[in-house]
Structure formats: structure tokens, C-alpha cells
Length: 228
Length: 241
Image (cartoon, rainbow over all chains, first blue to last red; front, side, top):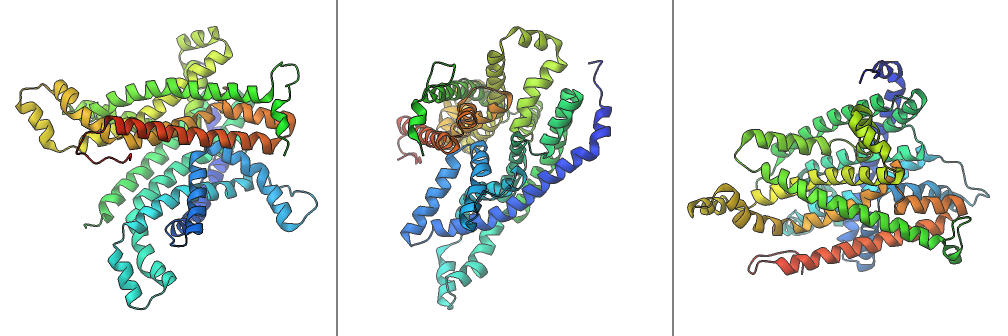
């Protein structure tokens, strides 16, 4: 243990914090985009129009049966090709792993948020839906004004827990050489041969952040639990 | 799309690309299998411990689960692969004596096993706690000790209740095996990447991996549903129809 040097953390802290900032940013964007896309997917899965429901559940089941790592690499080389085709360009654009990761995580997380929102929508009693239609609201109005706000509230703790999972999952982009928090630590660990110190530091920081967040999620659950 | 690529020989290897991926699949399933045994054993013990009346045991069990749940899996891989041997000289001496593949395999089994055990512990705990308190008391009332009450009354019911969540843990474990790629284990994802990089046939390699993972997910689902039906207690509602 004598040759450990934890000063390396102090020296490289700004660089590590830049990595952490990317991690947080990617988490927030993916949580926001994933919730919106996931909610739309949930509505599609519950739709009475069968082809739409089938397409949505096919997408969700596909995403949920694949390892995130595989999906990250799929999007990494698929996104440039898709953009090229959509724009009719001659060569695929240089997008880079940092930016394609945003697309990946929104698309991937949406499948998981979808299942949560579906449970949330189904937790609202049929009578409320009937009542909404009875007062003359159309489908979108009923969803927006009556059902989704309650579904969202009921599912908030679960959504938050899923977001903590997302926050941890983002670390996998480091395998594409992206400088997220883990990626930054890996680069310094290799440059300065300080593997032990770097990964211990990363583990401790993740633990503190995730523990605090899950504690908040638990408190929230007790606070907003609706008595049926 | 060029499917014949899978039949082509790998330069200097003497095997075809499809055999290379099949060997990766073997490592994925083998690693997941041993990790599951470890996870199920440790997870059951920790889960049970968290429902006993010994407060200090409950504390330790809770701390165990929190520790493994709040650190990303890839960081846990690096901890087991780099940090543990770096801090404990005895482990260092041992892993140096292993060949690299053995070292990667043992690390992956331990890492995935303990990571999954924390999740199983959580399921087992909630399964036991979902049973009515009367069952435990009834066990004590007919003169069973606490271990006997667990063995004959609580656990047989609790395990049946948690089969559906355990099914998703099996699938999570198989998917998580891909993260062992980060320490160089030659599992399915590693072989997929290798093939894509060496042949520039990204689409073919990744499509093959996608199909394989989908088949695994479906099979795992079926097998667990079968187990659920087999062990169902008559009169109790279960999910697997």
C-alpha cells in the first residue's frame, strides 16, 4: 500500500470533473428525451390501433432483450449512415461517439421508461378516462390534462430509480473512448499508471451520488404515495 | 449484406467467423451460468439475513446491497480486475500465476456474481416480507425454530413468489456479461466487435449478435416460465400461464 499516491486525484480533478459533467449532462438529456419518447411509446402500446401497438411493443421488447453495450455500438456506426441517407449526402457525417451517445441513450432508455409509464397509465381507473370523454375532452386532451399528470406522479419514484440506473449505465460509453467520468479516470489511470487510485475514487464518488439519489427517491415514494 | 462472410476462414486461425462467434456465445453462457450459481447462493443468504430479527445482521445485509447497487458495473469490473490485486498482495501473486483468460474468467464470474447477488438479495427479501406475518408465527407456534421456519414455511413460498423477478435477473445477468468485454473476456460481444473490426462487416456481425441475444432472451423467458409452472402451488395465482 506504500506506493499509493492519492494526490493524483487533486492534480487531475478539473479534468475528472469535466468528465463527470458530461456524464450528468448525458444522463439529464437522456432522462428528459427518454421520458417523452417513452411516454409516446406507452400510449402507442396501449393504443386500440393494433399495428401501432404491435410496432411499439416490438421496439420495446427488442431494446430490452439487447445488452446496452451492443446498442451503444449499433448507434455509433448506424447514426452517421442514417443521417447520410436522410440528408442525401454523399458521405456519412463525422458525428463522433460523444454525440451519437445522446441518441443511443434516449432511444434505449425510452424502452424502459415506456414500461414504467404504461404501468402508470394503467394505474389510473377506467372511470376517469370515461369521465374525461364524457365532459367532451378528446384523446389528447384527456391524456394531457387528466391521465398523464396522475400517471407521472404515481410513477415518479420508479422513474427516478430508473434514472439512477441510467446515470450508472452512461459509464459504458467510456468503452467508445468517450471522456465521461469513467473515461476520464481511465485516461489518467493509463497516463500516470495510477489505476488503483483512479478507480477507487470513481467508485467512491459514484457510490455517494447514487446512494444520496436513491435515498431521495425512497423519501419521495413515502411522501407522494397515493392512498387508494 | 454478405452472409457468406460467416463461412470465411479467419486469417491464421484455422476456424471460420461463425465458429469464432459460437465460441464467444459459449463464454457468455458459461460465465453467466457460474455467476448465477454464485449470485443465487450469496443473494439468498443475504436476502434471508435481512429479514431476521438480528438487527446487526440486517444492517450488514442492507449495507451489502447498497454497496453493489450504487456503483456502475463497469467500475466494479475495474475494481475486481485492477484494484483488488493492486491492494492485496496475496491476490496479486495468485492472479499472476493464472493465464490471462483464466484471470478474466474468474474476475467476471466473481464480479457479475456478486453484482447480481445484491439484486437477488433484494428480491428474496421482498418475497419473504410479502408473506403474511401469520405464516412465520404459525411456524413458531407449532414449535419450529427460526431456521426451520425459514426452511419449511417461509422460503418455499417466497421463492415461488419471486420467480418472475428472478427471470428478469437471469436475463439481466446474460446481458451484463457483455460488460466483461471491458476487461477483455472473449465473450459474444468481444467476438462480435473483433469480427466487425477485422472484416469491416459491421452490419453482418452486429445483426448476428442481435439475433443471438434475442434468442437467448426468449429462451431464458420460456425456461423460467416452465419452472414457474412446475413448482406452482395449487390455489396460488402465478404469472406463468
